[in-house]
Length: 126
Image 1 (cartoon, rainbow, N blue to C red):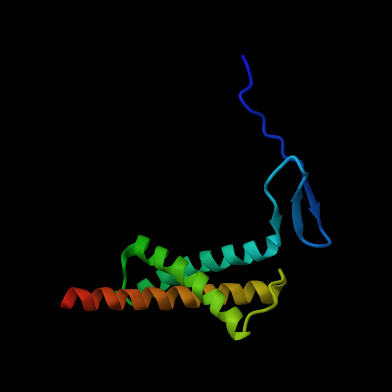
Image 2: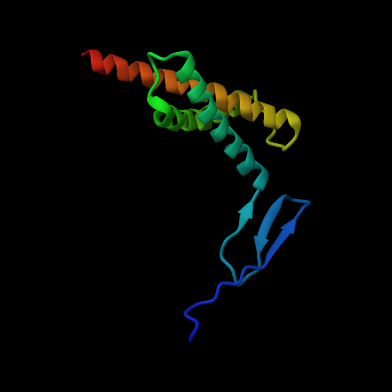
């Protein structure tokens, strides 16, 4: 039996700079893993916020899957808008960074779900 290809990942984690680097024989390089984790928190809280808004506003609800998808979209938008307005933290993985990501994602998810639900209802009436 012959080997078609071999993948060898040698990962070095540089804790001082929060970077993941791969040795020269590899091609993938990840930087600032904390920012990705905060984005994931925003997306998950956006999905939760979209579903909570769907339960609170049943006339605007898009169903569980629709609420989740629009909530994920809104979570990313909400977190980004908080950062642009200067209301978010510097992106660190401290308690305030996690709370601002949860709040921005959840609120953004609920708002975008309600807006898209209202547009869907308006289009259905015409």
